[in-house]
Structures are given as structure tokens and as C-alpha cells.
Length: 355
Ligand SMILES: C[S@@+](CC[C@H](N)C(=O)[O-])C[C@H]1O[C@@H](n2cnc3c(N)ncnc32)[C@H](O)[C@@H]1O
Ligand code: SF4
Ligand code: SF4
Image 1 (cartoon, helix red, strand yellow):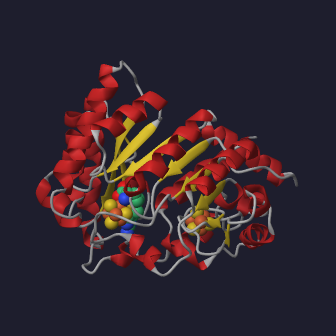
Image 2: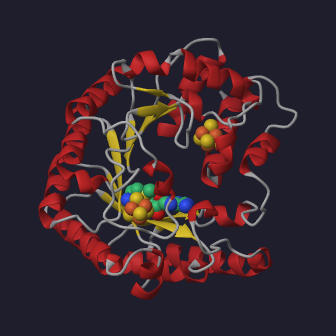
């Protein structure tokens, strides 16, 4: 449904019109209670403007609804539940306007009260970042005790949801695949099933922020593919949703830069269909400082303070980024992006060919 809406709006741009973003990614804070060894949050710790106020956050939600936004990803930055009051108000406001929402959290600060709140407002999805199927692996990548605390939160949310006979929030794991945990993909799926999580979303690691080498060695490709196939079979048997198959189809081990991969995808394709990434036309990101960009991994953008969302979305900075993307000149930070985005672009390109 949502991809169809994205394709519909992209078609408007393709035909010379203009359309608002479908998806918003918001970081309520850059503060975090954990220090995971691989985390790209380190990038956000440079001095920035102070955090957006609660009023500004709520204003952004309202303006987004007016602009036609349909879905929200509330994440970090840091840990959204470190700024619990403001974050929960934002989630409530998103639901008040009937938009769909996903919260990504490390889970360690989620109480039963928070779980009840999420069920009550009809929040759509919570993804808990868990990077290993046991304490040993998870608490090596994430700090001590984070495994037990996150698993407790998953179980609590599931219990509260079941007590209320609700199917919302849909519960998932977010698991960053790397050399320490990749052989345990099937175990992650089994753990998810055991504790009441319905999805395991695997993401490849962006290795640039870790002091130890977390990349999966190229020579392990065959082993990874075998593990992925086993994971897929187990997920099917247990009824756990997963994107693990993506790890079969793309050259994850290829060390060449991602920006080049995005460009390679559109070699020989002209016009709008040939843009390396469609995100600048359908996704807006707002960091805790108010710095906003027209995708998720942006480093070029403008501050939202004192401007309406609409002004920024159709403003000079975003339009210039779109123009450069059309000219097959994506920004340097596409190197830090994700294969998952590349896959989403492939799907959208196919959809646009058909409409
Ligand atoms: C930055 S965290 C913010 C939300 C929350 N603190 C959490 O851990 O879920 C959002 C997601 O980014 C992931 N992440 C952090 N550093 C990463 C990296 N270097 N490569 C890939 N994913 C990363 C985390 O594991 C988490 O799932
Ligand atoms: S909990 Fe999230 S934001 Fe905090 S260090 Fe870990 S991955 Fe980064
Ligand atoms: S970083 Fe580049 S590839 Fe990634 S979403 Fe943004 S524009 Fe697209």
C-alpha cells in the first residue's frame, strides 16, 4: 500500500508536478543511555544546535499531516525513550492524525506503563534493536545487561497487547548483521518467536564506527548464504516475518563503495527512472537538532527552526539535491547508506515502469 502511494507521488514528480513526502524519519534526541560498539551515533555527537523543543516536535507532526505524510519512523540519533515525555507525546500526536508509525528503540527503558500507553494509542509497530540471540553476543556488541532488559520489554509489550486483545503494536527485532553474529541468524529467528516478536529485520552493518573490524570476511560468503537459507526455512516454519532473503540477492561482501553501487543500478537508464535514489522525492528526515534532509542518511540539508516543513521540502536546498540526483550526481554520503535502500529503489523503479 505504502509503496504504491510512493510510486504514485513519484509519478507526479516524474511528470513535472510536485508532491509532499510520504515518509518522515524523526530523531527526538541524540542522547542515549547505551554505548554500542558499532553505533553511528558517534557522528551526531559533534556540537549541534540544541534539541528541538516539544512544541517544535509537535508542530512538525501537524505540518507533516497537512503535507500528506502517511508514515513515521521515530528512531535516533540516540535512544528515543531517553526523552520519554516528548517522544510519547509525539507518538500520540502522530496517531491523532491517523498516520502509521514505527518506533525503533533499544528497549532498555521501556516500562509496563509505556507498553500500556503504546497499546492504548494504537501505535503500529515497535522494533527492538537486539543484535544477538543471547547475552554473550548481544552484550558484546551492546553494553552489559542490554539483552535481558530488551527481552523483558519485548515480552511485556507482547503480554500487554495480548491482554487487550490487540494486534498492535506489531513487534519486531532490528538486528545488525556482522562477523560476530551472522552464523546465528536462525537463532535470532527462533528467539524472536519464543519471546513474542513477529518480525526479524536484518540490516547489514555500516562498519565505519567500530574500533574492531565487524565486516563479514569475503571468504565467508558461501557460509553466510547457507545460514541465510536455513534462517529462511526456520522463519517460514515458525511464521516469523523476515527480510533475511535480501542477504542472498545482493553482493553484501563487495567492499566497493555504496554510492557506486547505486549508480551502477541505473547505468543506461535515462530521465527520472534513471535516478540512483528516489528517496529525496518521498522521504524527509529531521534530526534532534532540527537539521532536516530529504532522505534518511543526509548530511546536507537545512534547519527546520523558523521555517515550515513545506518551505523546507520545496525549498532551494532540497530541490538542488534532487536536481543533482537527476543528473546522476548523488551526494557523497550515499556511501554510508544501506543496501536495504538500494533494494527499495529497485522495487520502486519496477513499479514506476509499470504505471
Ligand atoms: C541509532 S539506533 C537509534 C534507536 C535506538 N537507540 C536503538 O538502538 O534502536 C537505530 C538503529 O541503527 C542501528 N545502527 C546503529 N549503528 C549502526 C551501524 N553502524 N550500522 C548499521 N546499523 C546501525 C541500531 O542497531 C538501531 O537498530
Ligand atoms: S542504543 Fe541505539 S543509539 Fe544508543 S548506542 Fe546503541 S544503537 Fe546507538
Ligand atoms: S543517502 Fe543517498 S542513497 Fe541513501 S537514501 Fe539518501 S540519497 Fe538515497
